[in-house]
Image: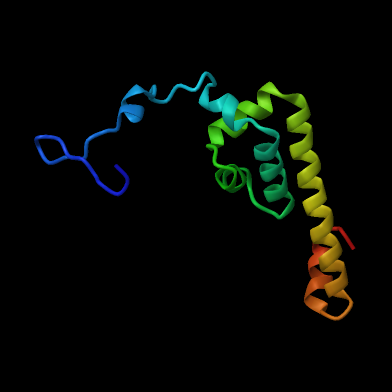
Length: 117
C-alpha cells in the first residue's frame, strides 16, 4: 500500500508491522560505544584544532561535555590527541599573529605582552 497512510480508531497514524516488530533503542551497542567511533574522535580533534573549546568541540561531534570528559579520562591516547590538537591550534594562532605583526603594530604589541615575541 504505497502512498496510503493508515490510521487507528482515534485518528492517529498506525504503525506498520515492521515498525511494531522493531525493538526500541536497542541495537546491541550502547549509545556511548556507538558514538565513540574514529570519525567522532576525529571531528572532536579537528574542532579543537580550529580553536573550539571542549564544550563546542563535543557539541560539534554530537556528544555532551560529560561524555567528552569521560572519554579523556578513560582513554589516555585520546586525551593525548586532544592535547596535541590544542598545541597545534595555539601554534597555528601564534604563527598567524606573527605574520600579522609584520604589518600591524597592535599584533606585535600583543606578542610582546604575552612574552611570545
